[in-house]
Image (cartoon, rainbow, N blue to C red):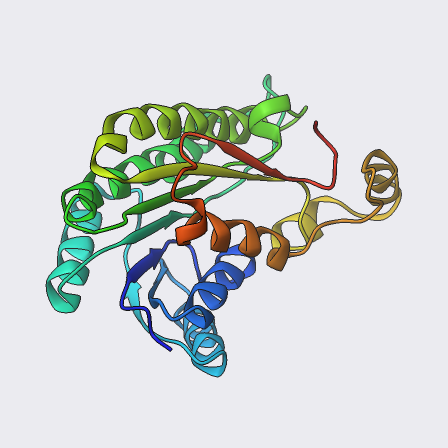
Length: 247
């Protein structure tokens, strides 16, 4: 049964974003699936939403481009007549040690992970103010809190999202809008599959009290809670979904 709300999930063509979009669709939200390049994968996400009993549409734009974001979010709010939920999931990780990281790689991570979320929050805020229960969920990372060697750029941007979340929660709370962060640990995605292999994977699992790598659905369930009425008194928080890797 549709609940009438409209949600935008950025970077929703695969992995965690796809799981979040599917979960929200199953709960009856109309889900706008954002993607940058891979339309076929985005179509697969939309198909998964519909298979779960939900509905949605695709929206192609680059979160790093403020002008594209403004146009896309205005279009969503205008066509649907409302805008209620924003999930900032789009992100890139370019792993490199501090002394070797290229300026372009540093700037790209800032542009997508941090500025991209800022662009979406700024563009969506005016419409969220009109929603009876506006929700923003920013997807950070365990490395945004504890850091990680070889991920100086990624860690910095994910830490920045936590500051963005807390400041927005203070600014928008009086209007009933909640703003929270989900900080996943290591999750089974294309990104982690490429970077965590063999002995490194085994060593990582030993550090996790629950003894396993997380699944995209683990993160999606946290987001599902935060955008629900059950979380109406939760704002400015970082919800860790990491199997106990960081406590």
